[in-house]
Image (cartoon, rainbow, N blue to C red):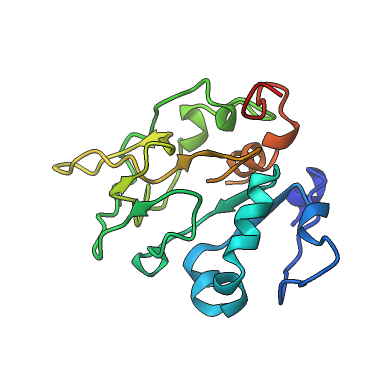
Length: 187
């Protein structure tokens, strides 16, 4: 929590979604915990259109974790996760940044390969297998004798906003303030 406070992030839990009063419009970002939230909270599934409208209007929604149950296309564009996605569990597997110039990796923190050094956990789990062309894969990693996995971190523009370790979290949630990110149409 102290890292969040030092970044001037005031975390909170939303339950249930306020139906009125401009609740979403007063926030620049939300983090949804993927299937854990969508599987347990009827209001998130029922009001998904409100969440997408919030993103269309410039908000950021970051889905941090997925399992096959999340594959109901709650996102901005379509995606597919198989029922048994391959994890990358070898702690020595390289994590390759596919587009180092993407704003997710450049502001407010410069993210590079060194940010993944020393990780002692699996490199990724529950990768998307296919996704709409609006999504851009940002990371790539394999286990030995496994195809490259690119569906672990996807980024997409949607409306005036964007769709989906503390430093890497800070960058996506800061995108609305990033001077390098312009709204569609150059505004």
